[in-house]
Amino acid sequence: MFTWGLTVCDSLVRACLFGPDRVLSSGDIDMATPDGRRVFVGLLVNLCLCEESCRGYIPTIQQHENADGRYWTIRCNRINSSGEQEAEMATFYSRGPAMAADRNFGRHTRGFPAAERLEEIDSPTLFAKVAWHYVERGAAGDQRSELLHLSRIRKEFENSTDPDLHVPLLQAGGPVAVSTDGGWQDMTTDAIYGPVISQAYGERQDSVVDADEDTKHACIPHRQLVVAVMSPCGETLDSVRSADELVVVLADAMRAHGEILRRCSLLHRGISTNNILVVRSPLDGTVHGALIDFDCAISVGVDRKARTGTLPFMSVLNLEANWRERTELDDWESLLYLVCWLATFGINKEDRKSVRSGGKDLRGLKITDWRHGEMSMIASRKRPVLHTLETFGSIIVAEFAFSGSAVSAEHNYNALAKVAVALYMALFQNKDVDKKYRGTWQTTSQACRWLSQRIHSSCAQRRG
Image (cartoon, rainbow, N blue to C red):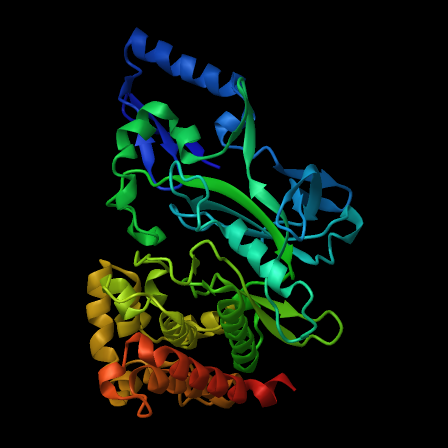
């Protein structure tokens, strides 16, 4: 949940608390003085004697070991088809996280392929997500709750018979709670930092934006640790074995995106490499794609123009905090950047290793500027690239991995180039849409229908 640490400089020591968004430090403890040594010993004693939850352990997620190796247990309440939590807690079993919390700050999302029985742990059918969700302090019913969104999706799609449509179906979950002297308490940043610090920064809470990468203007965003167990089970996006598989997975994910928007009125607002799972059949190895992570989603019609997403994949209007309301076109634009990103640096570990060993100076590519700096600056870097098909082709597509090489046919990154160009043309150079309407809500339905048809037709033969 959080981590304690120490910094040492000569005789001065500081205790540090590493939370989801900030590192808080104590004052100097001078080990050269008796008072300093007494305070330091007291700190160590308190850390040894306090409850595990006070040291950062999640009480309902624990690691174990048996004769077959290490495994994890995840305990949470089941959720019925009406979206209500059942009283009795269930236990799920996992070999470990497939999606690690590899950022210093933010949601710290971890994903565990999981099974309902220990004997089935190596054939998981569920996916357990653990993350620090941004929530509104004091809200009676936060309309951005991922559990709320997932419950709506389950009600709508639970009886779907379409074998090619994979949407997240919530099975269990809820806020993580810890035992305290006063009973049970939800694990929030308020609980970690304490009432004094939370109250001091509470007035600045409303200034926080949704994007994890841009929380520096708010001192401590209010977050809550939440577990969501859902089906289907999947692997991370870098488990695809070819560019053809990637196209199929992305097409499926965006089809789910469109169906959820149409039937549940939920806009995802967070298309990225971490939010799409590869669902591989255990029988014949064929793949499908599933869209997850609805903690940035919002109901259509809710007035919320805050910026959301992962920097390299955010749309230009999103980065600029433009006054226009976000639509599904912003998510399709994110898909374009995702395709370009993977096609440049490699779609899986093997391809990324080949790209790095090829001697190409990746640091000099314009696309690398999409992940660093202020959001408005990143938007200003993207706009010239998107000005014409020629600039997009020469600056971005021409730098796709394996372009023109002897192994190009083997990797088939040409398929990714075709998808990227089709997405670009529909989003930015669509001749079927009057210029005065481009980028406005009038283009949304028409452009998205066109995009969906193009990407699905491009992967139809690959699925076979």
